[in-house]
Length: 181
Image (cartoon, rainbow, N blue to C red):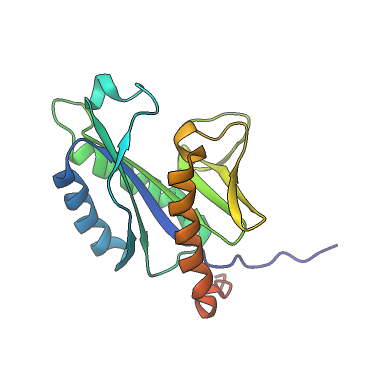
């Protein structure tokens, strides 16, 4: 029998969808206060993969990714998702979201996204939050699964996420397991 081990620290990432750069800026200010300095900001990317958000958020939508210098313990992702949901609500207008915020984390082997939606490939964490392995690391790049959203399958997103993983891998000293209480 193997012993239970403490998890390694992981790199927090946040993907945002909005029509306005101003909303990205407001959200980023909040994130810096909560999670510390941002070490990576992607360029703003056109988002045309689905009309799912169009009725609520309008169009054209843009995507932006950020990551943080400070690593987190992986079990914090559920609490972070609840926090980002509250930010979405605060930035809403007329009971409609104006920004969609998707937190996740990168480890040496995968990209995990937090979600409120259950499905066969998602694991329940707590407080209505699930985790999904969205991409796996194999042969020097992230690869999608059959359930991976079309945008996360794109070369543009994978290049960004590979870059963020490289940042994560460069901080080897911070990847020590977290103490348990």
